[in-house]
Image: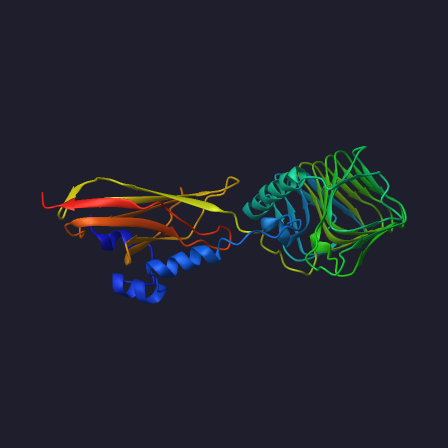
Length: 354
């Protein structure tokens, strides 16, 4: 098996010299990339990634039921249930997905986001009642397992538009009639997350800001305004003459995850013109994600080739062109938006005359 076949996944380049010219990948360049990608994550509370669920203003598991002239700006999704009723008179300024692949993926991403929020370390354990208080960025939990809002809750970002607020309720979130959540000093609804262990009920003519992620159901009573999302994992979302608007700000990526790269060889020592296969394996430093992107294989300062990682996080490079010598082989994972770059230990590959 020759080198050219293994480089084929890099479709924009047809030769080894072209590959080197386009990517400018020398051993030194790739090492610099690895250093640039190794910066530490911001110490502030990271945002909860909603994945494809970020496209939705309303997402539910069993049913979505509406009464009256509700307006939803953003997509509406239901999975695995199929019963969506009350549209019209309700209006969806977006796309409706009922028990299709898009809704199923969004529900899966919602599950991951819910689990992420639930696992966040709590900064402060606070009383049930949030009304009449001001909260700064952080992760909050109720000692009683439930949160309520009577009056006004103010979320103060202290000048940081990326500030994240996470409220974790083991059981319920209940907001009183005419209650409200207001944003101050750069706070954004997109960065506010309500993790609810059972069900949420939003009182009549109340205003809530942020992303409600309930394990069971969400009831949005008459005249409620939600600047954010209402997303129920397993049960129903019930609406009544409400206004629900997906936050205008786009989903921001979470901090890249560290990676680790290992390298093995199929035969060592090898004889001249014998096929030698090098396999680089890239794994995430944390979580269950599988890194994607490119791996560059080098022999001391010379670039041998670049191969895309497969679905299992491996890049395989084979060659019959190694000269009689003691070669110093290394693999460099270049990284991408989700994973930091890393480099493998060096392998001494001996090629003999035979």
